[in-house]
Length: 211
View 1 (cartoon, rainbow, N blue to C red):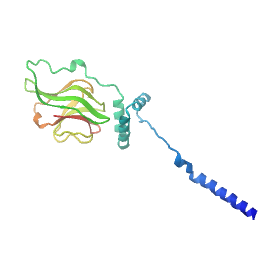
View 2 (cartoon, rainbow, N blue to C red; view 1 turned 90 degrees about the vertical axis):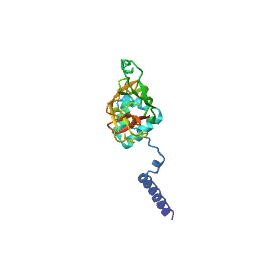
View 3 (cartoon, rainbow, N blue to C red; view 1 turned 180 degrees about the horizontal axis):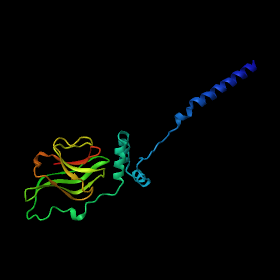
């Protein structure tokens, strides 16, 4: 009888050991934390991303889940140096005997932690009847291939789009500094509701200023 009990006990121990090996229950109590870097960034750029405010890092990680290429390009742009408009290019257009007239003006907004700008966008009518869009006290989050548009709508989310009949005024001259954009003579500025900073490769609104 004692021998049978010993055999049964040995079998029970063996079953427990096999169960532990197969199912590894301890793994349910282990946290495997993953912190993979964006693959296209240098070590210095990865450090710069790591030093970003938490909300910006979280936004980049969320973006990477949907579009890794876009997240990488935005991270590259935002960890790079500011593109400051040269001082000699920041003044109002020269040779104006009279003061320009303000047609419309608005302030840029932050859309989320990695898309946003501050400063004002103003449409001026110059003495010769032409129009110019001017940014003042301007600073934008940096991004890949940013451009300036006039929009018939006021986009306030990243993928809102530009609306119909948008007017392309050119590449953003710098993410920091006052700057001027000539508006084509055939554009009826009264039809346009906002100025928009727009990322062309990924069709993303970085900021808008409602007039």
